[in-house]
Length: 575
Ligand code: FES
Image 1: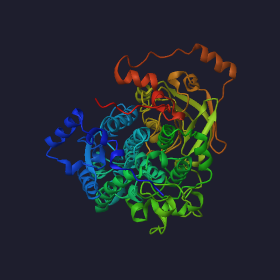
Image 2 (image 1 turned 90 degrees about the horizontal axis):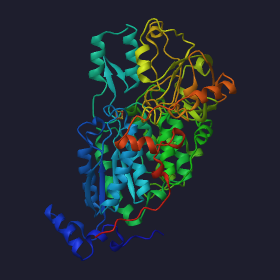
Image 3 (image 1 turned 90 degrees about the vertical axis):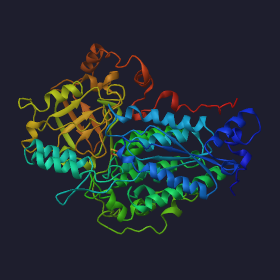
């Protein structure tokens, strides 16, 4: 039986419930808003961490949804306070939002710690926001629940359905090949993002919202609801009601994120054909909970779970269709024999309870385990002398001929070097070349930008080539596709073997065998390593300098070293 907290057990009681000089100050300032004791006395204070902003189009509805959450909190007898946080608009933030994921995680943790907050509603969805919010909440350790922003509606161009990201890359290649006009390109620009909400392909946003639900951090079914759907408002209010009870029940993140829940989330990720970014984020989230998740676990489970969500870029449909098909509950119901159904979730029920009765309504959108959409898994972890700590590929989004490949390297020292050469007609490149991009990792990018889907050289695009083997220490957008080997660890900027590759070296990749090999002798490798010189630091001050000093490598989730440690952080003194 769950023991319920008493009002005097609430964190906020220390600010508001005692009788001293400081609490006089706190209460008098709440009265300044027009509140009185009926608003707060004996009630859990719910912090709504909102990543709404005028620049994040994926979250433009979250300002209104916060009002729905507040309605729910009031209905359940709580006291809601909205606290804005960095919004991390994926498209606008440069050089990459990944530079700031840990910043938002820290902001979330410290907003919750420094204020009189008993429970948190986390509002986000655009790529880095869900993992960042959850990382902060896990570290803080008070009850927390996510309102996933939800996907936008399908794109449309001349009656054709457009998907975020995936169709941008596709039609950009068609434009470079001269197959579509400037006017066509303008029309695509008008039709690809028609409503608020996150990218509606199986990009990082959709993947991380689904993973959040699979872990147990959203109400069941919420991650699949399109942002403009009225159900999104209703579920936001339900979330507000639920967090109040979570506080009384003391249902903290540590009771939800367990090794079993993480395995469930990885299996869902594989079945969804999710973004490769999930590997970095889930490792970071697990480590915040003190769980040592390794890349090998992803590889093991990817061999067990086929892709069954027929959603781009691995499949055909979009997240709006996935919702109509039954959403995540229907997909998880298919995975039932493989999931740990006893895992606890934010609604106080188990995964098994939450998926009971779920049904697939559109069988071509969500397939069954016996009829997967791809025989290739959603992820593979390769190792070898080029990536001793591992690297990542998404076999389900690769042209089959490239799953086993040997070819000469064409090396780009950094992004600008690549950009200066890639469109040249005299570039010495064939479809068998392996494009290599250096200095795009956690420290080198910096922030590991999504440059891993290197453009196919224009010369080859015009010849009809649409996929080539590409290797980098960068990430790629979840909406990207192709034979892109990513997250090479250790990265080139710190002297990993990728730094030592030269144009013309032969590289061998065997995805079924999970190997990646730079075909030079150990002696030659050692000679090049001895001659390698560390680049000068990119930042000398500010957040960038702190980031560069403390950021971890991709295989360990790119968290800051001082945030991973499982050490005690004291509750603030109230003087
Ligand atoms: Fe926000 Fe894609 S830009 S989810």
